[in-house]
Structures are given as structure tokens and as C-alpha cells.
Length: 120
Image 1: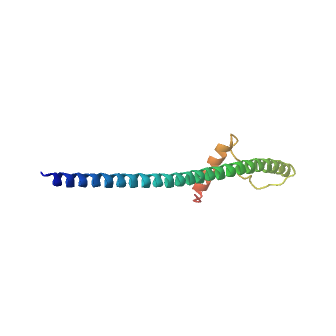
Image 2: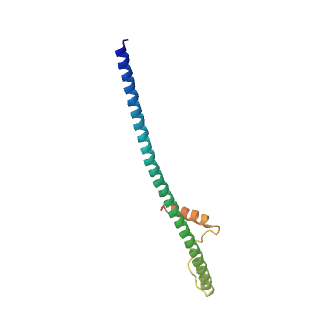
Image 3: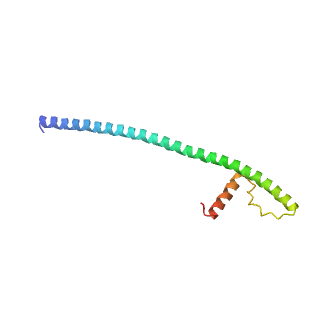
């Protein structure tokens, strides 16, 4: 190989090295941008899940209030029914009572009721 061919080959190799460095830098830049975009999306999705859980929590708290109100009304109705029976009346049957052992059981019972009615 003569000197000119070697120099030309060295120039080609140098240009390939420059091109490879440029491609590598472009790939790193694109990877960084994609990582930034995915991080933003991840944070948005995380907030969305947190909002869903907060909504569920609020509904459970509301449910707890309704359970207590149901128990209060049920007790009042049972007392009224008992007085009606004492007065000789034949009142209709009492509605179903809620399970007494916690909100978890009440919710599970109600879910089963809704499923059996085909509402869930």
C-alpha cells in the first residue's frame, strides 16, 4: 500500500469515527428525551391512581356514614314495629338487617346482594 492509500484509509476511518460519535450522541440525546417523557407520563399515571384511591376512600367513608344511618333507622323501625305489635297491629316484615361485624362484612354482603340481583 502506498502512502496516499494509507492516508485515504485513515481519513475514512476518522470520518467513520466522527459519524459513529455523532450517531452515539444522537442516540443518547433521544434516549434522554424519551426517558424524560416517560417519567412525566409515569408521574401523571401515578397521580391518576392516587386520585382513584382517594375517590375510593371517600366513597368508603360515605358508605360508613350510610351504614350508621341505616343502623339507626333500623333500630327505630324495630322499636316502632314492636309497639305496633303491642297495640294489636300486624305490621309487615322488617327489611333485612345489616351484618353487625364491621364495614367490611356489610360491603361484602351488599356486593353479594347486588350480584344476586344482576346489578353487578
